[in-house]
Amino acid sequence: MARVPVDEILIAGRWRRGGGAPIETVNPADGTPITTVHAASPADVDEAARAAAEAAAAPAWRDLLPHRRARVLYRIGDLIEERADELAALQTADTGKTLTETRALAASAAGTFRYTAAALETAEDSLTPARGPYVTMSVYEPIGVVGAINPWNSPIASDAQKAAPALAGGNAVLLKPAEWTPLVSLAFGRLVHRVLAEEGLPTALLSVLPGRGGVVGDAIVTHPLVRRIGFTGGTATGRAIARAAAGRLVPVSLELGGKSPTIVREDADLEQALAGVMFGIFSSSGQSCVAGSRLFVHRSRYDSFLGELVARVRGLRVGSGTDPDTQVAPLVHHRHRDAVAGYVDLARAEGGRVLCGGAAPHGEAYAAGAYYLPTVIDGLPNSARACQEEIFGPVLVALPYDDEDDLVRQAEDSVYGLACGIWTRDARAAWRLARRIDAGTVWINTYKQFSISTPFGGMKDSGLGTEKGRDLIRSYQRQKSLYWGTDTTPLPWAH
Ligand code: NAD
Image (cartoon, rainbow, N blue to C red; front, side, top):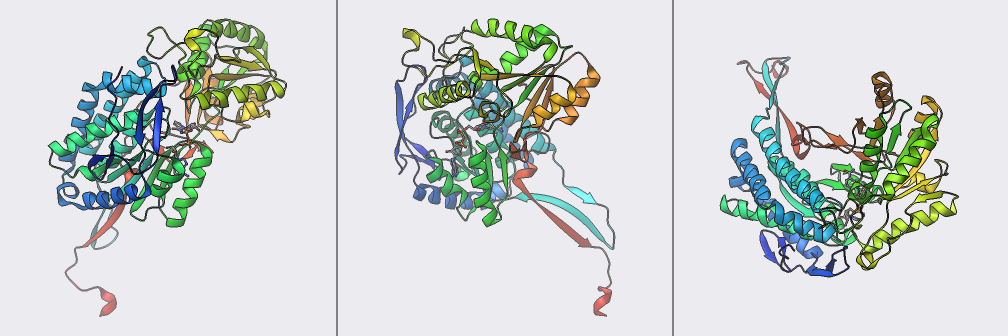
């Protein structure tokens, strides 16, 4: 079991008990309470924002040269890696995810800090072509205080994806983890805090402020000193945040929900497609924004593919995240498990056939946990709610298609545009489909692979803006243009 953090949150560079309501964190594998953490109060957010503004303006930070700031990020990356086992154990306890996955998330967070440090050291301002007697250049500067609001599904990786570029950009960060999963973000805050203190930098550069979205999240989004918001979460929340930010003319980036199509063409490699479709939806127990939750199979192979898929899904090992054999771990929270079960009931009511799963597993080992069996449903039209709405659990809906136009029409009949998977041996068909489908990421003969060096974002209701990639720091900076006159004579107009 991981070391359980004490009831303290990071406000304005200091650790103390939050002034908000108590949050009881629960291990979803067995329903046992882990600890209680008091949330931040709006007054705590205000204090954190004021201290962050001062920290961002402090010469020790503001004037730190990029290669020196990069050193701070490298150190944070190293420390995350050193503590990866502890962070992973804590995250498994808090989110239910398998240790294999939480270790990978910690490694990814360390990699994000290192990649961002390298991008920072090598980023260049530009000299633009002069069109008069002056030198013109474009430079990037910090924004000031930025808010980073994250969901519960991959806390440490999403924390790093926002905090690393925001710090690299010379800003201070107010980080808000989801109410259900504050623990690993607080542990991450301890590591960043330690590095900042050791480097003699203002520790108020990062505050970690857990609590309810409508209270703490809203206090961050509406705070006058917060000048940019990075948000990952549900589409409805993203829309509300964008509305609030628009009123203040504060830029936002939104990484939102999805209902991603995963396509098995008639020429697909069967083994690859089966493994990829199962991994795409059932890894992370389906609690992944990019989950391949709508399966489209060419009608000529539909019955045989689905028969084989269902047989294999029945064999997936459901269990606790700490068991190395587990493939499908519990969902994050009992309430979320019940919401997923509600969607399966709805699919039944809409006329869907539940081919496997469709219930919590039986047995002593599962009784107290937030488990749900991997579920495959077919017989629904694409217009059914179970095919249109994000379930965010281990539930796959399967639909046949007749030809490419029918496929694209069905796949595109969705408000979302986050990801798409294509399983085919035909390179030209892969290219055509990849370019026709509205999705921020398309995987061809693979699925749910991520790289910090490749931009990630959603189209349509799946988001606005991107994270990751070579330019990841730029979205946390402001661009300024300089015109530097080279003429020795006065401007002609005044003569
Ligand atoms: P959510 O939208 O309920 O909450 C996300 C965060 O926003 C939480 O920290 C929450 O407390 C906060 N929040 C809620 N209301 C707020 C408000 N009014 N003002 C400010 N903050 C507020 O999402 P969730 O249930 O925690 O996470 C699941 C969702 O996240 C899914 O839709 C999933 O697809 C999405 N997600 C997207 C990506 C991506 O990169 N596109 C990645 C992971 C998860």
